[in-house]
Image 1 (cartoon, rainbow, N blue to C red):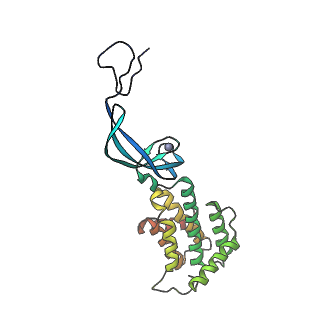
Image 2: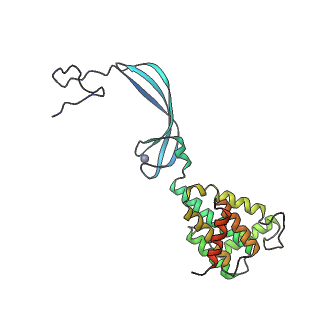
Image 3: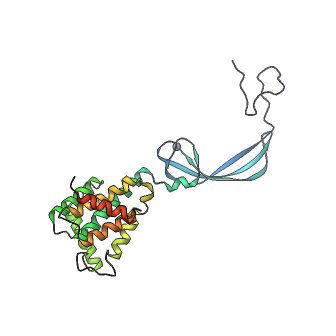
Amino acid sequence: MRPARGQNGTNPTGAPGPRLRPRLWSVRILWHTVGDGEFFCPDCGGDRNYQRRTGRRRLTVLGIPLATRGTAGPVVECAACQGHFGTEVLDHPTTTRFSAMLRDAVHTVALAVLAAGGTSSRTVTTTAVATVRAAGFDDCTEDQLVALIEALAADTGRFLTDPVDETDPCGAALAIELHEALEPLAPHLAPAGRESILLQGARIALADGPYSAAEREVLSTVGGALSLCADDTARLLAAARTPS
Ligand SMILES: [Zn+2]
């Protein structure tokens, strides 16, 4: 059996017996919790509780804390695996938050396309409902979507299908909504994921025939808010028109 070893390693004198000498000196970090919450742990690979901690380094001689040797952290400590991470790990949304962002993004895109193309075509509204349901709003109905579009029209004073205002082709309020829903999501999505959101909007617009000018305008705004370049957006919108 190997003799147990202390933190200070071997017994340098080579004296017999497993007796351990106390470590002469060490630097210990005393951690203090300054906050907590839920985050996506990159080590566990899931949503976990965390504690945000800062520390003070203490020089310890023969187990007695003597002097402060500066601060440590702040770090984010996973409650499950005790892993320590930089605070930038909190920029990554939890999977719960990410799913909600994705669902809201599709819902906002569907509303924007309906606002641009109008709600008079049954094919368009049923496609929109199917898209929004597939994104996670299981109990979404046509009546709900139409009511939201009417509220939006009442709010902005017009439907986007009204004659295009050259100074405000997409509807400033709608453009802001799209940017707020899509921009925070874009950095966390692979290109295919961002393209998929645009294509879901395109399929709603195409349900009753080719894109109208207003629909094309809205979908271009969607592409931009998803950090897709104008060329890619145009290519994807053209590809969506070609029946597979
Ligand atoms: Zn963890």
